[in-house]
Image (cartoon, rainbow, N blue to C red; front, top):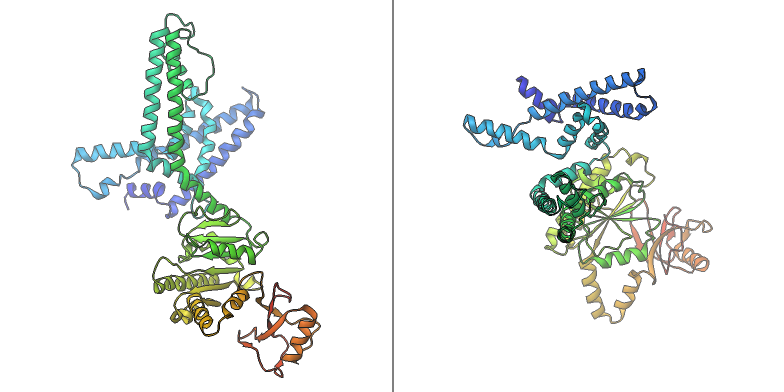
Length: 499
């Protein structure tokens, strides 16, 4: 490796050991310089302590200067990696590319930092605090500081246009006022004074240190005020458009770093599925158990504010921590209605497999009292076993359930409404509960169901083995129910303790 390649790796390749060493050294200098800025006000000017701090400060700034210079000089223009150019064209590209690199936001901050070496610009020392924006340790998926700088870079043409409009208005307004009032306004002694007035006016700051005194000068000022309103609106639109995704990235990091535990994650939510959210609100207390919607697109407008939205792809294991899957209680995977059933089920199966694989690898799995439960929706009955093999604890065949209900209503009129009420919240729902403590087991099913009905008012219709998951609905009345079994019962609300 040549010296040039080594220096490029040191300053531009984060995966190398040398880069990490240099970054650690730079961070040490940044933190030390911050400490110097904090303690400097406690020493009087000209004292021995102040002199020592000044020497340390100049030494740190000199190291910053060397680091920034080497970072710019070792930058490799991407154009030269793609195109062959003659010597003069290559030299031109090398120079222009480095100038563009030096004008990027983070490098500009570094340059402004080292300008404090000039005695007249020592007031810029505090700008070194902006170098803290380089940190990415707190943000795993989307560093918002880098997102903001990237937004400025990607929309640099828009910002160039906006600043060009601002500059043109300032120059035209300032020179116009200078020509109109240079002999009558005592506050305007140079073009610089009039340009300062124009900039202050167009940005609606209005210090009042310079004001027009002639009628024509006031007309110029009025035109600058009106132009300033349109200019500010232009900047607001551009900044709002550019920074939207960076702000959304902060939301993702905020949730990842939050204390959400025992929440419900819904994967596969898409526009038009508002009924799912309505049912969740009826069945679950979202204040005690938050619901997080996890999808690969921006938050739809229809999603109510009580639901948290996290943008990400649930089929990618590297993004599951965005929704804190390992800390959740349940995961619901819904099938898409925008594609064919087989394609929707394929995505559901892949999502279930990815989540289960991620959960099995997590060190938190052994610390949980109960494993994360995955409930998956399948549209084609052929894929039920595939979904179970992929890791789904329960699989709901929505299309088959709907079609079965339709045909059963034709064969036996009147059962459709009754069956629907068993499913809908607020009616006679089907629940699973543990055996009450005052009910001794083993006991005959008929005796056990009568005791539970007398004590709670709910109707027991079956039993469930919690170990195997096997269910027996309407078993013989003399069948013995073993200790530890769970019961299936109908009630308007949960009456028995959850297993």
